[in-house]
Image 1 (cartoon, helix red, strand yellow):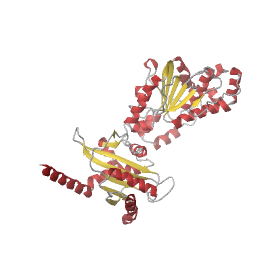
Image 2 (spheres, rainbow, N blue to C red):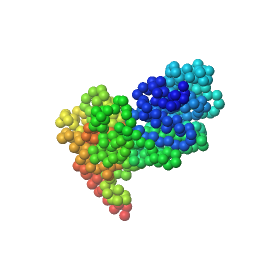
Image 3 (tube, one colour):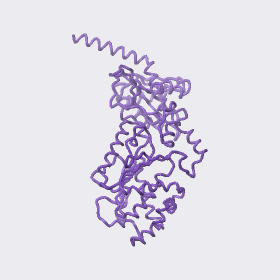
Image 4 (tube, one colour):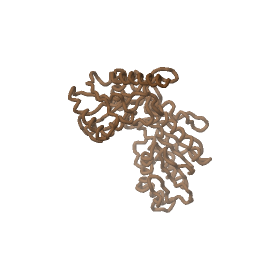
Length: 457
């Protein structure tokens, strides 16, 4: 029986309930199965191609073949990693064929032991006592030092975050390097996923003997649910760079999508303005309030003007007291010279500014915002292209900026579902360049500095 499963592992996948696997997936499953021979294997396959499913099929076979195997499965975070443990445990407890095999080979009616959680699993057929269980699950930021494994599978540890943050990319690379300390000298590592950035962790990975990464882009393997109509629909629905990375497994220049923006550890700009793109209604699943804070500064090295920014967004309207309070506190941390509220309601916008002023008084803030409003004309896409996209080469985000805000800005394109964060950033950049209040403040600050310098002489 086991020989038949190994000969055509996709059919074993059908036994496990993964009926969409085809004979073409046998190649991938065998990549997993040959890893215990030692070394490194790297597989990139497009989204929705069942590569993680192939890994699950292979793990079941590996545990049946090697009862003492100590496996570490790593994904981007603990929640995603736990799904692997849950899926495997379900197979070993509910699949009749697998349970019959365990009984025939090991004489056990159940594989379950006391160590049976989302983090660690010990199978009843494991006889050798070791510190490490059969299966250990972890996110890449979890603490797993001191353990040693025979087999490490890293699945999708490169993700969207790696396209947006230099720090995240470096953290993922560092984790890949650390895996060397967790693997036994004769152990093996398997990496699967899709690329997100030209300098992500896949850029440092090579298979044993320097073999190139095995890549299976869209159309290279037949998937039952993916036809040309599906491809056309999905390709149209996402930015060019995202489609290229996740389905064509390559990096392309995309003139429509804003793309990654570098981060800086601290602001060097002295003065800031803020722009709020609010929602005035309260519709579930559609409301969003965004604020962007921007400062301009001459780069110390080149003298060129760079734009330093941060922002935050909420999936609620400014009618929520919690949103207003959090927004006011966020503004207070940076003390913008002028805070402008976007309006589609003309002069009636003042009624929405008043609650902000009341909140400032209630919180006892020593510095109050200079509130203004503006009725925006034209479409958002034009504003974003004019003020954000065109300034991308000199735009920097502050480290710690709300990841959701960053994601919606860097992933913005004309068909993007959520435009408000990018639009608030566009509004803030425009405001910094046109604010009379800011210019008056800068002139006044300059005069005060001159007087103080003269007094010190």
